[in-house]
Image (cartoon, rainbow, N blue to C red; front, side, top):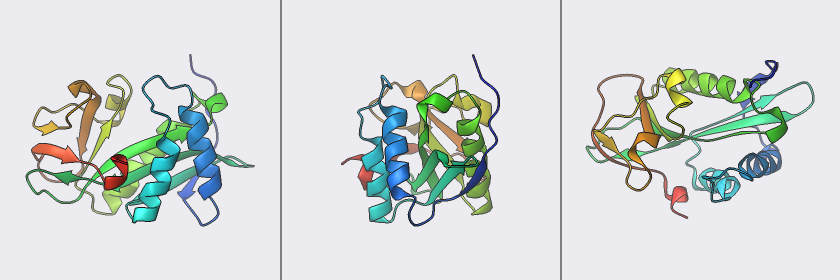
Length: 171
């Protein structure tokens, strides 16, 4: 069931947003069955390492209500210009209002505008195809069930091989 669409403004993360993003990410993943509960630390680690390639927040009239992060990935065949999407966070009480979808669409457009060749993610095989993501067997991420690892080609050919996320994902 989805609620009414929620009016938000999307902008790049700014200095001073870090504590809100941390609290928002922690709350968003608190009750997720697939979460290890460390996504909020991941965003901080990506930022600290200089691997937060794009960090966007969604705001309503009074506060930050959502966040999305993109970080560089390496692909075994040496292809450059690919990024990982995630995490995407929305305050739990605001789920199903289109905030996450707006962040994903905006983030994909921004990454395309910045010259990104493609985006990978680990996520719902039911949710992400609506944005053009699909599972492709030639791109692999060992560990989780293969169908959860999806990609979106923005420019050029689909690369092949094992994908490695930024070091913060291993911490």
